[in-house]
Amino acid sequence: MSEEAVEFVKTGKRKTAVARVRLAPGEGRITVNKRSLADYFGRPTSRMIVEQPLVLTETKGRYDVKVNVCGGGISAQAAAIRHGVTRALLEANPDFRPTLKKAGYITRDPRKVERKKYGRHKARKRPQYSKR
Image 1 (cartoon, rainbow, N blue to C red):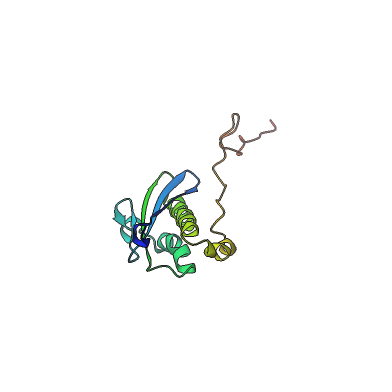
Image 2: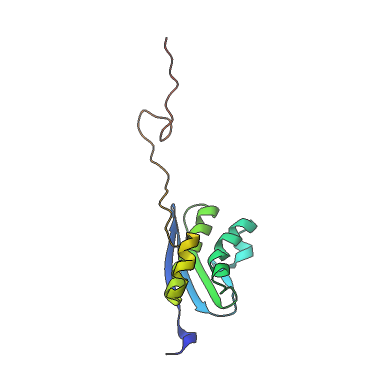
């Protein structure tokens, strides 16, 4: 089997955002929901977050990244894509593990929105207290 036919498919998550990432050898094109990265993410910060694992491992121009992402907000989607790209890179080359681990990209961020409790306005906010 040739190297060009290899495709690494991994899932990245953050809050309620789920990103299905396909990493294949190519020219470095990043496609998110059939749109270019710059077209999908307006903020440069979000684009930077998505590219972080590729920049760190110096593989930015070597892989084409196709992403299908849904759920969550823009920031959570960017972080979910970063998580998926990191996992795919690890499958492509396990030698990247120490570098990515040190940067903290391998760990899935477990923080989620806390559920609303009864007798409260939000998860923790209490009704106003009055002595009389």
